[in-house]
Image 1: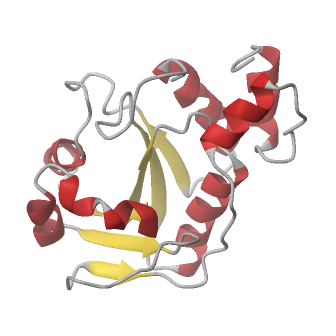
Image 2: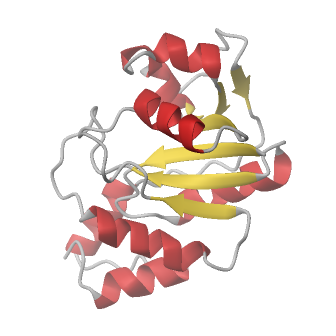
Length: 189
């Protein structure tokens, strides 16, 4: 099965994340998209990072009715910070029958050369890259696939966190179940 891996902190998940995952399942050759919740991104600071189990549960509740979307905690018991190459190797060992590709925005592609063993990632896996505002995409490898048409939204998890802290109503910027869970637990306030 051809599976797209959508790595991220998802701190918290917002409608942009869900739109991207849905687009890749419906408009590319990927049969499934898995949200891989990263306990700690090596290129980001850990400030205001919600506990990984809460982030996992929020996504799980949000996508439970869609068989083409999954969420994974595979990185939870791996050394921190999480490195994509290590996760890819572990998944391939565990599920050798699957063909994995990573999903990333053009903003991440810009810094891809900073990723651990990025050359090996590109040699062994495909990268599906979607456009992000203000980040030009240049295809520089045979395994980088530019996916045009993905809806673009200028929304970020940091904007969501800041807005919640300021008491703003962001209920339309997060998927419904994710917002309800976040609001009920008073996260990011």
